[in-house]
Image (cartoon, rainbow, N blue to C red):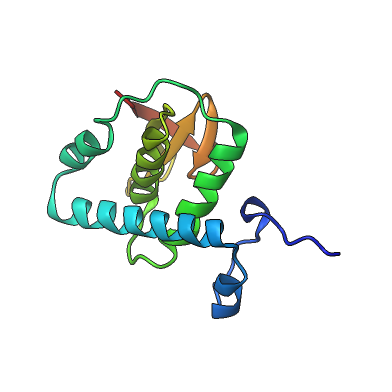
Length: 152
């Protein structure tokens, strides 16, 4: 019997109805949860300041370290949900992932940096980091670290 790939092993790409319908019930439910969180954070960043949204996200008391499986699941869910939310930038995704991890009691930091040597135009980027593992945002190479915003 052929095993279906887990959410963490799915290749990025276009989401088709068939692909969504192939998810297990728990995967689909988690994706819906991530979609709601990403959409709410995106709306919050549109209507409110970053500090206000960050304050809402980090108000949860998160102290423990997440397992690699939890980190992979959050990375998959948030990245997949972000494909359905217009302008779900790296900051939106990092805040969303931090909220989801914090709801599970897992600590994380949002790392903000700027691209080195870009000339006239500054390019900022945000990552979600948990226990020195980059969860969302890709590689930090080529960026100068500015600030970390952690869970409370």
